[in-house]
Length: 391
Ligand SMILES: NC(=O)c1ccc[n+]([C@@H]2O[C@H](COP(=O)([O-])OP(=O)(O)OC[C@H]3O[C@@H](n4cnc5c(N)ncnc54)[C@H](O)[C@@H]3O)[C@@H](O)[C@H]2O)c1
Image 1 (tube, rainbow, N blue to C red):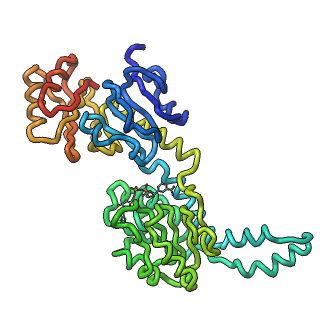
Image 2: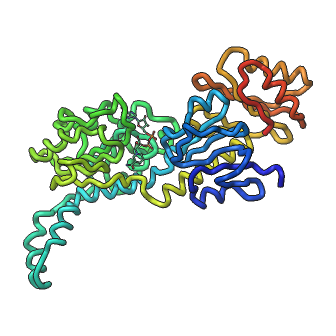
Image 3: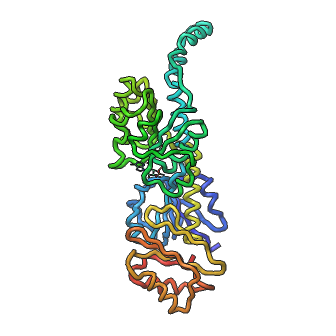
């Protein structure tokens, strides 16, 4: 089986993911010579000497700090990641967080655990104590969602199913997410508009200079009394001190987040969880499956989905055609030179897709009939071409 693709794994990858790379077409191992691609989770690739044969790197996970993304782009090597693969895991914990706060589950549970005496004494204490934990129900309440990406959209749709009204704010929502979003989710005009119309606000944005402290004292004041804040995004997007002050002043009812800190973790109206958002077996499997599928589509069809350094490029194959996949610097006249080179070899183009992103461009060309590998050598000789292969 000489033509199998060779995949080097740098971490243990979930079996469900590896099953997407069938043995008749793929050889996958943690020590393999001349790999076509690298599949990893958190292994550090920065100091690794990359074998010359590698054409792609796939990371099962969202962040790519452990991969030299820019250096690989310069060599014409796309790096894939798996955005959204853990969205359901986070969504489920956010829903749990809403219910934790609405029904005062954490303090009520602490109370129940602290009950002493025989069962008759416990019954008496329960009837006396339960009035301190009266909660509220979700239908009729308005949930505000900041950031309608993979997680925000999943939370929005599920919250509606629980009977809540949902208000979203995301000035840069993608077309794909807009299609997934329930049509009855309303659009907030601004963050202030969102806070002033919501009972519960949950944050699902990345942490950057625009989102740091996005939930702050001034915006909390706009919320209806008895409100709840949730942060399962990143520590820093919410000004924790402002939330604690609003809780102590009795304006807010609760705060549920995934980032324990001193002052926060022991507060009676706060529930902090130890960064559990994506911690499910299924999320890990989803990441591995998505990484393997994207790698396979690239190796077998040249298609690029969810790359952090290459443009999205997906082209249906023309039946009977041979496909060329070419990465090049994003400079003028590359497609012209490539087409001229093909025409010079008497090769007819059946379909072509050219996409660019920053300094890199990527071209998929389906040409009529069979062509031999010398055409790739001719294309590689063009200045600015980073890689060229028959797929
Ligand atoms: N708790 C955890 O374990 C856990 C797990 C996964 C992800 N996360 C965090 O959740 C966040 C969201 O994840 P995702 O997969 O939905 O990401 P995503 O990239 O799919 O969505 C993020 C969305 O935020 C929007 N956005 C960015 N800046 C904004 C702003 N200033 N105002 C409003 N919207 C803004 C973007 O347009 C995008 O639609 C990530 O940043 C990640 O750090 C946490």
